[in-house]
Length: 360
Ligand code: KG4
Ligand code: ZN
Image (cartoon, rainbow, N blue to C red; front, side, top):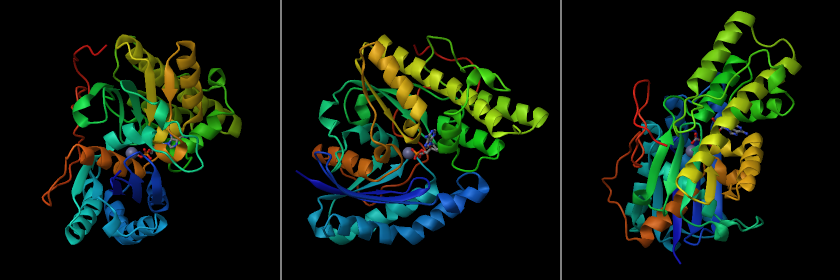
């Protein structure tokens, strides 16, 4: 059994964790920068990079000491090197290289999206162990602030993961954050909109919103239209005057989003004849998404696996675990490893408008 130190700094969380190759999390430290970005209503890349630089040493030290280990005891240092904000990635990457060089332990570069898709295999003390029930192949719905896509995962390695369809424009978490900003609800928007939507009724909303890209055969997503519809509504009618109509509007937005995600995920599983579904990424914390996906999967006898909330949002445990999988295959990187804003997973959905290949 190997033990890997993972480091994550791709966006607005500075994180480090120590994980065993069977998925057991020995420590997991996440330091959120959310307060630094909140006044701007979104992540400011320059602030993110500077903040990571201040926090990284403390966070890595805490991860090792929580695991009661020293650098000598780990078998490798895994680090997110793509996709993400390049200035932010550089901080974690440089820290990981320094630790690898100083300790002589191998360096393993990890794709953040692979980390999210594998987060379902993490095992934490005090949590029900669901990792053992998950088996390949599964359809993975990855929903976060930076990415929204459906994948067919034949195995845990990059080469075994196929994109079935992704967003043509905004990621779903980005849409939540932008709509929340338009409605004056603060940042990050997802949890607030989720909370308000639970008290609202889509049919009573001052703005009726339909699920976007509803044609059955397409596995691509588009969320910018919902955001624009909310922006037009706010420009014409202003922000809902009372809590009740705010809740109805949030419910209408959330209903359109969740219906789209559930419908396309089920279509992906059925069209590929896959019996297991995994939902990962920050938006997988959404209560309506979890509930409606569960209902829909149960009705079709599909097995649904949703990681615990800690595993859904950005963390380094998922990076350490993905690093351990790569290490098992003998895949390590040298000190020339660089950052990239793009994922290593082959993309087939083009951003923007225009003609597409059918993806159903
Ligand atoms: O995976 P994540 O922590 O970071 C990225 O890799 O992007 O996801 C963050 C995103 C944010 O956009 C946040 O608004 C959204 O996840 N989010 C939610 C909920 N909790 C977090 N969206 C909807 N409902 C939630 N409960
Ligand atoms: Zn993420």
